[in-house]
Image (cartoon, rainbow, N blue to C red; front, side, top):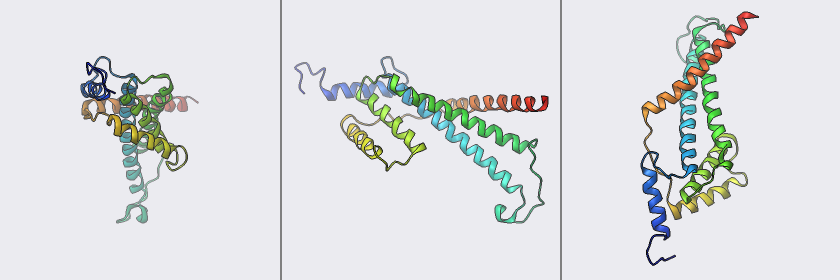
Length: 196
């Protein structure tokens, strides 16, 4: 595809899109790419909250005093009741993870409504679709290997998605947002349970 003024050739169009994508939130960025970026943030926050939940669970297991679970000296058994600080922290961590994952799922659900305006946008949408399957299904079942193959071909032609650095402040803010929502939910459930 050769154009006399070289403004519409594939390398120029793709190159311009890559330059636009490397800057934070440039004007004219593909909506599908913005959606992918938001989805990445939501998934990352849910993974961090999952790790927090697992750490709380590990501490809960260690507090049982069961030698097989604690891999060390037995400690006196401590009854686990819903009002303990550790149980409340676990419940909050679980709910915060659910809030973050729900946000990611809502973004996935909006894929059909967002039009990609570049090859990079199409790649972003396919990345989200394949990423969703990693969470819920078997990546060896039809059509996932086929979609992965198409994605690989598109990346070979157009290049990959822009690699950006995650802002720690933004990540902390995302996690804190879900944590605060979970704290409010747990407090409301506790108040509702006490009222009954």
